[in-house]
Length: 507
Image (cartoon, rainbow, N blue to C red; front, side, top):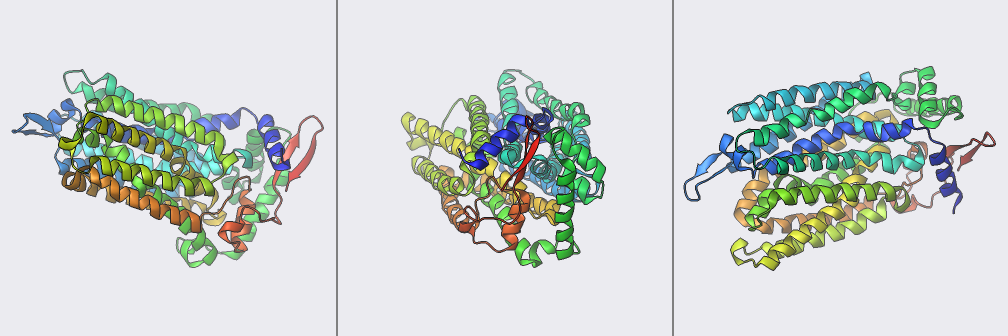
């Protein structure tokens, strides 16, 4: 075992229970976004929902949402996310991470009330959905920053990946609820699902009083005594919190001296920040472009299109796979790292999509049962591979790559890149899929090949590095492929040995 690994194990053993509360409840708000996204994907194929808001097809005598309704219902949700990211960044910066989570929970609750009280107005329904997604955008702007700043180095991959993990947990809860309610003959088949969302902000209300504020944010606001208390709560009573606060203060001061005004423009005009912004935003764009917006929002419609019957049950299976994959990723991210996993998985994801496109290219009429099964298996394999790799690791990058002086803004820009890409996909996909059917998978497969090139040339390896060391390597212009072996001047994480009460540094 290396010194770094031994030190990481020592830190994990000595961490207080509160850090695990932060791991779970610091990301609980993202489950709400996953819940809303998942039930919408399932309910688009629900006959009770379609009868409430859709139109009757005289040829098939079935109710269905039009392509326009699908686009509006999905796309306006993404508009809400984008608005939430813009609103979340200044709230996050001024009020702190914890207060922003309070605001986010209140907004989601308002949206749920509007959705659940809807009778026959599709406009009211999608307005409520937009507000819920507004809360999802605020969560996107705060959770990666909060988890990344609270995490010890040895747990940063795990903690930063919880955003995506809870998206899957929320999605699983929604898909299971839709499946269990599928036989209710009236509009409660979908209304129960909408009302059930309230459990997620309620969990936030219960847990938020126990969560500490981010030490980084407290130091940036000159609240040094509170930062010491927060660090001791997060690392343990024996942790040398005063020394860590002094180091953070000095680090932030150097950042302020280098960039006196932390404006949005600084994310692009400063060459060092521009490189970091490109990595964060680019990773989020390619995460969406490889097909997750298609799979998350339209997989039920896609399965119907190729003649698969049990689409609601398959939605449950998809999210079970997602939860398991994210748990595996959380356990392995800090061991396997980022760069090699992202490059290799891009090729795997591309291969899966190309096979799906080949199997479904001639339409459902020409597909045998074995071809349908093969297409579904490849879709499940794609989803598992994505949720082990690009799904959570993109949020890990969003937590660790942004510079401290514009962290909130870079995180917001990253989320903006993701959801603008997702917005384009969800608006365009229904029409594209209606025209070319399963061949739409060829497009996502090609974009996975482009993602491989992006990861190979731009994403460095940052596992087991402190945020200060990452700052140093970007500031020194270290080439992408040299990050892994580079020896930093900045010290590593402070390790506390409770038995000897001595302090060491993991350089």
